[in-house]
Length: 191
Image (cartoon, rainbow, N blue to C red):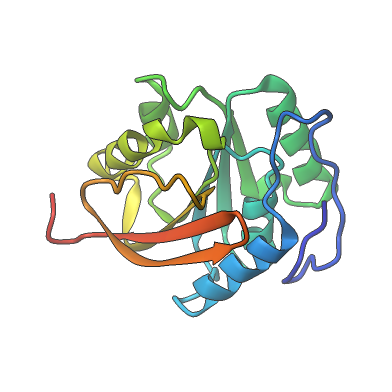
């Protein structure tokens, strides 16, 4: 894996061993970063990377100026690999890695326990597990974890879009081959 832009541009890091993760391609990461740059960028933001896999989305955000990142995955080998990669990239002090099953009712309270408001949220669930994403995002909003004006980025299979979560507006959707990326923001009028 390689960081595409920012202060760590070109730096490589190891992802988890095996084929249990589906890393976001460099092309899609660069396109997402460009889209977010047009919406205020990353400088000083707090990032939440759900279904983190390799951690590439959070690492890219940190390289481009994000202040902190919380990376969540359920696989212990994956979370170890993320921690190792964060250390190798010199990002360990700016990362919190949590091993949580995001379908568990205790996951969201554990994510919000630190009290952080997240300005950028990345959701790259396994394509076969997109159904819980709507409930997860609604719970994060209900628990006050998503900052006003935040941008939520949901990567999904083009032919299988996730249900839109209540309390969010669609900003845009972009398609890159078989992959689609949905950009959402909290609807400030919906509680």
